[in-house]
Image 1 (tube, helix red, strand yellow):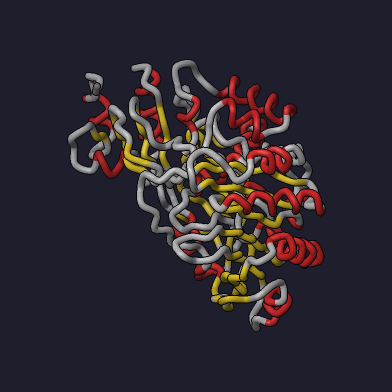
Image 2 (cartoon, rainbow, N blue to C red):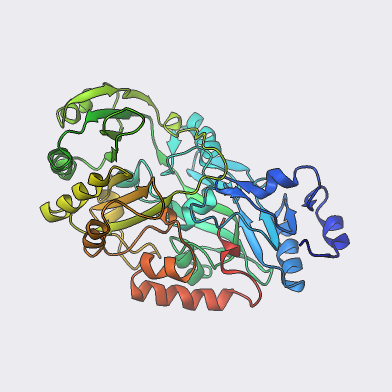
Length: 431
């Protein structure tokens, strides 16, 4: 039941930005990729001051506060049924300084918007796979993208951020200002405040060799081994993602290799990858980096069951466990190559601590809350160092327990306690 909340002060402070059930645009604001929520209020600020006003209002009225940026949270953190939903999508400005390569990005911007702003300047940033993914959510979780081996995570290119704390205070953070909060923002996921602006340092990026090669999947273990061996010997400018897809709607099982080779202008770098298996089709081509993000046309309401683990070594035993995951016929298995620039950052430099991982393995269930063979996943996860918080379909303390090493988790909790305030929800600071 909708609460009766006095909102006159809020509506006067945030013009045309306070929506209640039944108002125009309320449903659009309350609906994300993972479903339609029913918050008591949807607030759409245009400025940091308005964000702070909304945060103080929520605190004063003891309303659970949830933040929505791109709305792609697999765990459903930006879809809620009560409280105040802070929709940041009007804070989407992107300002580029080509001389310093500094990029100021609003907390509600998407990676597609950022890529389009950087393209005319020959610049790029590690981003997600999809243009509509929010900069906020992806960055706070670490930010694994198509240039992760070449230029590191999104957080490795973050030089500052503006944060509204749970108390409504506006802070500028960097390595020199509130360094503990800045450390936690780089991979800590949530519980830290509402980030209204991200300051990045972009990298010169021109054309890339990008696309997908589809292979037949008669023998998963053979293909997995060939991919691992090739990726281990590859230069940092190559990042690949190997997806193993089960049979579906009359189509046999296939493997789809997504790849991004930075600085490739001729396409010759594709030849060794085509030799990994029996090629069924390929759409790989040289294209501008800004064109690599998929548009993403998922129907709202779909929330897959996902598990993932970082593997420090993808040895033969681990590959055997991965191959076993494909045997049930209802699991999509994805392996992301890591290393390179990601591994050259000390593990304790950011809240993203999985710097030594060779691979991130993700399993997506297509049939309920089971992931292939339970034994195979348990055996595989036992070899891992933790999980990528952005690819978990659970949230809260359980997510923290599986995502972060104990020392990182303890340090995160100390930062959260310092900057948080009673009465605000744990999910209320994660776009």
